[in-house]
Image (cartoon, rainbow, N blue to C red; front, side, top):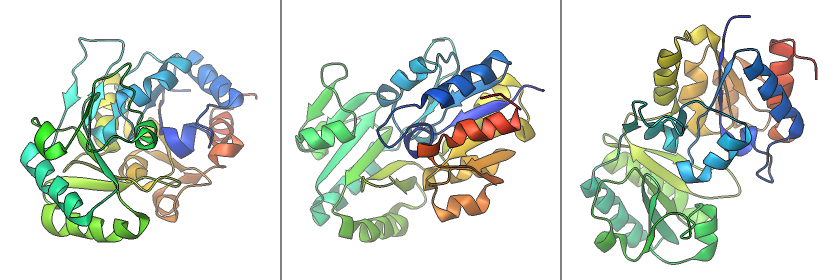
Length: 272
């Protein structure tokens, strides 16, 4: 079979609800790679919160982080990195809106450097902010954030989500994209306008000379919409949001039921 590019979202897709990769899925992906297919991770997570799964799968490919705001190759420093931060001026305006709404917390990221508005160990755990391995600056973001951030992460109260996202649409729609994380986290993630996982996937597909009809993409949330639509074979997980299932070409089992493995075994005729 001709070489395919297989793009994997992490949370709710490759990872189980316990944030691990099932043995069968890992074995199936390894067989696909042994047969010459290319496996990449495309996630909203930053590099620091996804590299362990990259190594666990034994990948040596580029990776899409932060929903396309950071596209890089963890094992090839000469690869053409794409880093597309938003304007710090826009970030400060959004931060002020968060202050006005008295949200729980806000975090800014410049690649793997973390800026946290208020110290909170639970939030640091959710945002994968580990000060032992990556720089973490704690304090008012209006004062500490001086450079253009790769992303902003807002932790609002659940009842604030709709109002804040509506405000972002009304005041910043031309310059930013915003997404909501899936359950159980009520997080709004913001990157520069025009960025999404499909942007990263297109760059990687071009690098490997893979046409769209041989791109298989798996996802479950609204930050996977463009990627699933872009791929010739867009696969929604059984636990995916209805909007994603509506634009996908296939629906597989859930992340808890080895959905990736079951689809690839059938598509490539891999024996389990």
